[in-house]
Amino acid sequence: MKKVLIILVGVLLLVCFFLDSCTVTSHKENKKHKTDQAGQPKVASNISMLIEAKKNEITGNVEKAEELFRQYIGKYPDDATAYFELSRIVANKKQVHEASELAGKATKLDPANTWYQLFYAEVLQLDGKYKDAISVYERITATNPDILDYYYQLAALYLSTEKYPDA
Image (cartoon, rainbow, N blue to C red; front, side):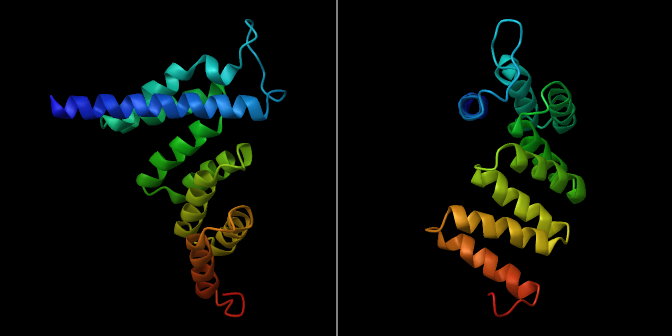
């Protein structure tokens, strides 16, 4: 019973996250989003597919979740959330090159999302693209100058690429 309750609470939190993500995106770039026949943003009109995909991931059916995220991206290619979630699944399968491409797409669609940027930098490092990861961390530190951890990560990347004066 306790496990079911934890899963239910997790799914509800994710629903709130997805709804908030779609709302923020639609307000920021309202003119960029295409609408359906009812005039609603297409990204928000099929949120149930995202919720179903995340539910499958949480309950361990990762293959089905990956399939649903890919279908969603096929229908709604301008939704950064789906690219981010799919990149996490792919990264967990050790397919870091594809994960970095998907995370990069998420950051291009929603460049203000620091979490997407951080994950993108992480998978770039796993993919051996340290110079690209440095560029991402430079953007992150420029937009979040008060968070010291980001500077530490950037300094570590400088050291690993032998850019000692920059560290």
